[in-house]
Length: 114
Length: 112
Image 1 (cartoon, each protein chain N blue to C red):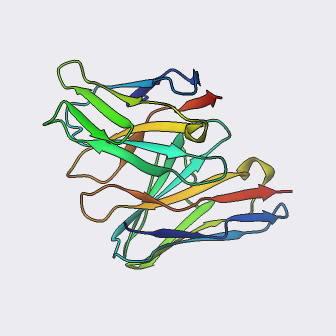
Image 2: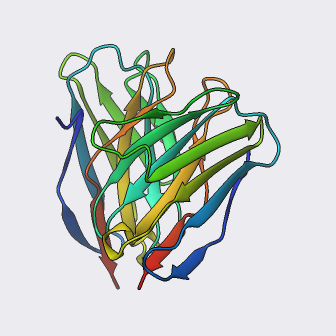
Image 3: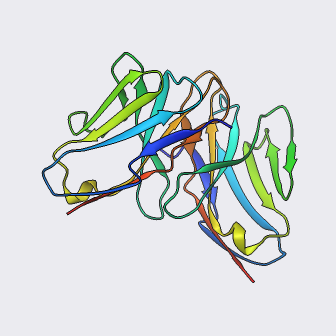
């Protein structure tokens, strides 16, 4: 099946710094990728839809300036958490969907801001 | 507004028993209904999926039952095993769109 690779798997950063998370589709091209956030024992909440070559579409309540999304190629989307604070600590997951088939998810990134 | 409602929130089943998780949706434009399994610290992995033109789909010990008129679908795990202990999410999407709407998740524990 298709593979979506996410990096890093976990990261610890100091409050006020920025963190970049990468999401790659390894064996298919993804014009659209999705970024989710998941709090402990909760569901996946869609943060934004990343579109190759154009601006991302953010869900209501998600700060565009804090969560910068770049989708520069058909196989790579990045999420940058800027000026991170402890409340940004969460599990971030990306996904991509080849055509209309099932979605494939990355392994997730555990972000801890100290 | 929760597009997909899932129950129960948690479930404890004896080894060998049947685990049943239910989901309901409102948007009749949804036409793809997958179930995902997630282990702690990992991303969700597709378990099984169904489209509304069939009422049931079975893959090994996993079965989806789909009731289009009631706008409900459920996951049945037969002969549940301790290795099945995980969080299960139902989801729905429109074929023409790409976004998935997830249920709230069910934490399944299978006790030996």
